[in-house]
Length: 304
Image 1 (cartoon, rainbow, N blue to C red):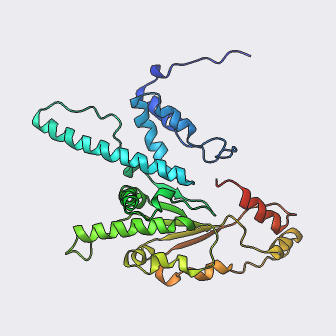
Image 2 (image 1 turned 60 degrees about the horizontal axis):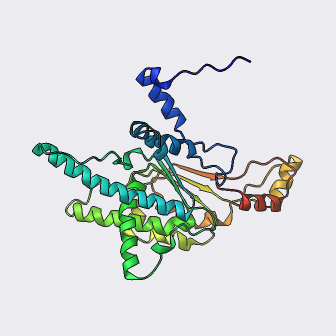
Image 3 (image 1 turned 30 degrees about the vertical axis):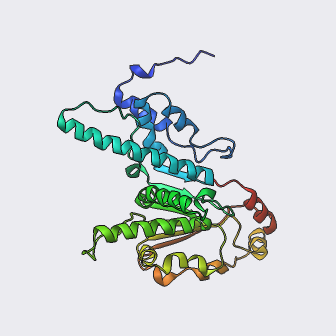
């Protein structure tokens, strides 16, 4: 076999080299490896270490879809947002110094995340996504939580598509409250000011049969306004919402009963005034298969 010819990237036209780098930086969410074994962001993160210029090309691909499936992922993301907040202050100082003809401070790591985040997914079924230090009741840590909410809110609400586990709904409701209060402070005399979020698609995952979880949203003015603004709602469960009879019918080629699962009764349909599309996700399996097997395998599967 003839050896593969190597062609230095630097010899390519700039436009073509950028296209190659952007393609290589795309996360591999459809990989066969479990996320615990190989992060879908591994190639993107490696490219960010090549150079400052390559990092600026790779970061938009990294941020396009943000997956925060564990508490430690959320904590590290919030830490990164705090760092970017500091870099943003340096950037403002540099802009002022530029106008005054003064020497600027080197600030190569500054990058505005919000315009590049299109999809964000927080939480996994059965786990508390909020980092422990943000749950502590002491005043000092309450201040830490408030700061975390303040940096997370602009990123979370700027994404057109948001996916949450039920365990993350409390955190999201706090972000909504923070944005709503800020909106009231800046638009005190404008009742028709736009909503402080761009979210159009909401995806919820995990198991719920209680209406109390929805009360985090529908019982507040900001939550009610949010529910009334989204146009697409998707529900994805880690365990099947169909019973044994459904799979028996599928195996025998009989008509299947698509009765509504209990959790669907808790959805506040009347509050979803702008809803255009509702989707339910359930596992694609090949018969024969017992419902109990599907439940067990779904519960043990990694969130991909």
